[in-house]
Amino acid sequence: MSGESYSKRELTAIGAFVVASVLIGVGAYQLGFNLSGGRAVGAEMVAASAPAPVSGQSLYASNCAGCHGGKGEGGGVGPALANSLTWSLEDFSNAVLNGKSPDRELSPVMPRFAVTGLDGETATDEQVKAIHDYLGTLK
Ligand code: HEC
Image 1 (cartoon, helix red, strand yellow):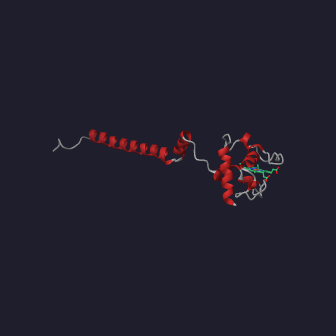
Image 2: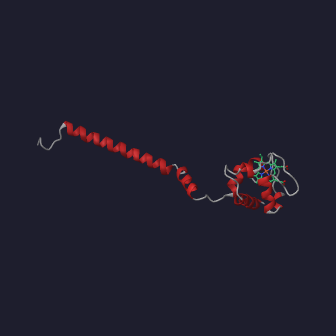
Image 3: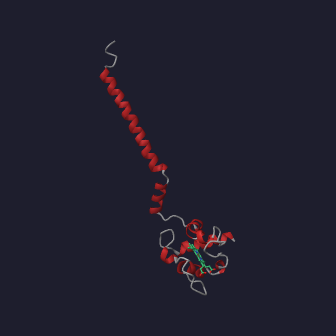
């Protein structure tokens, strides 16, 4: 009989093993949660390896809407964009990137996105076209 029961020392060792296993399990779970659950980490890794698709809507929202209104209707510091949407893409880009409309130099309040960049990155023609296309869908 006594040979089958565990000594106090054995029980303590088993108990410690169980506690340690649970702690390791919880720790691993939390680590996994932070790596995969914090979606942003994965998204950044994707962005670093392959360029994220250019979204005119989000570019417009974060770089232009504050001055030109949520739908390019104006009302902020900037004018409505309906008129400039009748320009060629080339003229529109020149206004956005260099602050030059077809007939004049725009006020310095309008950022020169060739200088300031879009979303902290050097502005590309692709981004300006995406914004232009997005605004075109709002008409
Ligand atoms: C800090 C405010 C501000 C931000 C941000 C801003 N603009 Fe402007 N924008 C202006 C102002 C002010 C004018 C008018 C300048 C003038 O008439 O001399 C203007 C003019 C323009 C024009 C010429 C409109 C016309 O009919 O003459 C275009 C096109 C334009 N902005 C596009 C954009 C786009 C696209 C973005 C985002 C990438 C943007 N702007 C961000 C303030 C801003």
